[in-house]
Length: 194
Image (cartoon, rainbow, N blue to C red; front, side, top):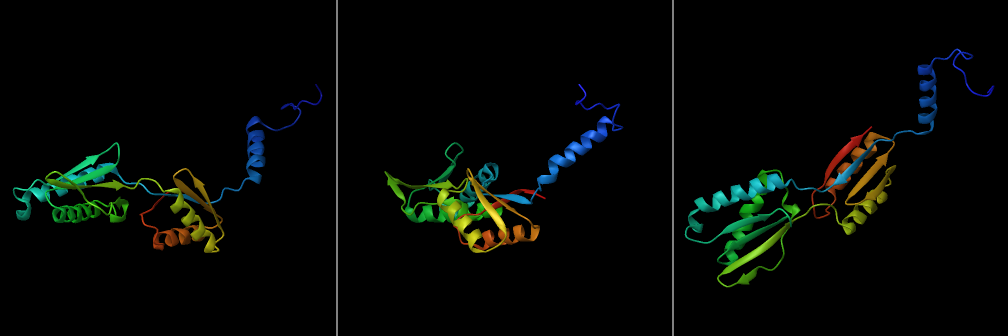
């Protein structure tokens, strides 16, 4: 019983004891600034872009009397572009890219296959919206960061990459490095912690 700490014997209050314990716990842990690199497409903005592109096609003279449509599939995160000729499908893709860009979605986030499918009287292409970072691209980003010789660490966590470092300047340099690297898709930075 003598070994137990008594608040009466020691002139420490309970609150002071908690402060001391918390200080000892956090003494060894030094929180380092970090952020996450992600690649996400806002599906609501994509839907708005598809609606705007459909409205433009309805009002254009060169598409009068022509079956030309855009269909957004939320489940598969794809946009089906359909028309009566392959040339018109390419025109529709240009319209769609312009509308996506106006809504804040970069054109590189749209993965369009090379070949256009012909079925009956229609031609179509199914473009996929890139969500998340694929493992091959993740490895390229981590290699790019390591080759830069900055004092940061990059960890792959699912479909995102966590970057930690001692200084904010190094983290901002990594952001500029990733933006400047030609990696085939747009990236966003979130969860910036000091």
